[in-house]
Amino acid sequence: MDNPAVGRILREIADLLEIKHDNPFKIRAYRNAGDLVANHPHAVASLDASGLREIPGIGKDLAARILEITETGGCAYHRELVAEFPPSVLDLLHLQGVGPKTVATLYRELHVRTLDDLEQAAVSGRVRAIRGMGAKKEALILKALGERKRYAGRHLLARADEAALALAAHLRQHAPGADITPVGSLRRGCETCGDLDILAAGADQSLMEALMAYAPVERVLAHGETKSSVLLAGGLQADLRLVPSESRGAALQYFTGSKTHNIALRDRAMSRGLKLNEYGLFRVEGDERVAGETEDEVYQALGLDWIPPELREARGEIEAAEARRLPRLVERDDLRGDLHTHTTETDGKDSVAAMAEAARGAGLEYLAITDHTQSLAMANGLDEPRALAHAKAIRALDGHGGVRLLAGVECDIRPDGSLDLADDCLAALDVVVASVHSALNQDRQQMTERLLRALEHPHVDILGHPTSRMLLRREPSAVDIEAVVAAAVRYRVALEINSQVHRLDLSDIHARLARDLGAPIVISSDAHSRDAFGVLRWGVVVARRAWLEPRDVLNTRPFAEFKAALRRNRAR
Ligand code: DGT
Ligand code: CA
Ligand code: CA
Ligand code: ZN
Image (cartoon, rainbow, N blue to C red; front, side):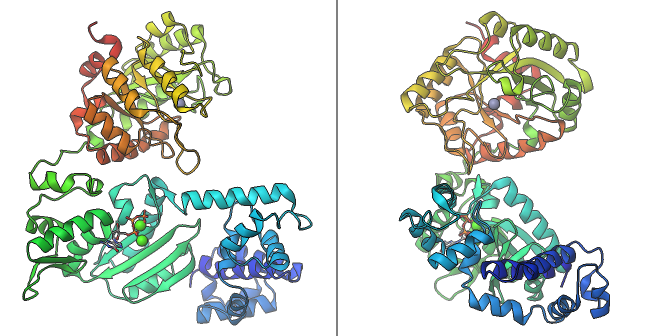
């Protein structure tokens, strides 16, 4: 057992004791010991009782407890506490702004054991009636419950990817010969993921023990021979499945999903006298195995081209694969430019020169510097004289680090749809991204008219983050997206896919609509520092899920061609 795993048990004891309203000194001692152990430079599992007691803050009783944990993988005291409280009580602790003290009070006074109990108590006004709680606390709890429900424990794609990468690396150390791949919604590039699904082909069952020993594991939800589930710190659940090597392809296919794509494939198999499951593709008669070792052979055996995971949503990909007409999806390496970045001139962290160098490092040939405008006072937005002076400075650096620079702004779209800088100033720039940052709660008609007015403006080239959504935080603004796309087509204004991990705005569905209607599209980073160009990969994932090919994305074009395609540089 490694230090974080031991520390986890000690901290859980502290949490449970706190809920129990136990002795505060004891609670503090356990929480303290949890932190000490988790951060101890040497493996506590290698220490005996006297070695443990040498750690300042660890007394005789705690040392014995820790020894029991490292020797047996758990301790009776912890098990007693868990038996005393339903494990669902620990879910309450994961709510935003609800600590053990609150959970303790709720449990003692209102017998709240589950999230549902808590919701009922709060809705019926019983929470506010408790001393030390009040209406404000009750409202906070309801808000936290609402958020939890709305986002139902979903996680940003980028965060899920990071967690999966780390977990897969840990598992690979224990099974170097096995094939370990993240599957599920993460492999399909969905904007948020409900949980992580990791597939291991050709590993033996000891891999399950390696999962249990993974430091960030907070709770074990299921522990089986071929399937286990754990809860990682931060609330992300991970499912690990083991399959034999010969089923690798079939299992990859099955666990990548989506469910609706799988159902369509299974029906297709059935109509051909075949049956498809996670072990392979078999003839219904005689059970002969037709395919299963690779995904490619599974799709081929069903008369289909291999379908990229991002398309597996039952949105026409099976028909396209049958007709051999799948798109050649855009890739990160196809991008030659970035059209939305910030510098120290407003709220960015790095200079124009540093951004240019970093863009080069990210493989880009051109870069638009688009700092904020005056309405964004908090970001020190530019007025006309500053915008023009900044443009001059940017142009003076054109070619720096081998990168062509475009002097632009991210011009705020005011609530009435007018732009935040005077026309002659906007006309003097190389590119104008126009975006909404305020009055996001306008009704659908107002917001649509506001965007249409901005799109009509002759000096607008790109509409930035068109719906203002913040994944898991803020819903997209109400807007008639078809009208916006139609106007973008008409005026040849490019619609942005903003690659910020919280935005991904346009979404995949909206970007597909934009492509289908023929609107120009760009993929931009909205980078606020030189180390932030990496997010472009997420914008590319959205574009792929939208079926975009390189020719659908303006910034895959060489610089001169791109520049000529900007609205301001087109004839008429
Ligand atoms: P999520 O976790 O909500 O972001 O979405 P997924 O797609 O990762 O869903 P999840 O984790 O429930 O299951 C992973 C994949 O496993 C899913 O995409 C397809 C496959 N799968 C799971 N359950 C079923 C099922 O009942 N039928 C079929 N055909 N496939 C399933
Ligand atoms: Ca999943
Ligand atoms: Ca799952
Ligand atoms: Zn913006």
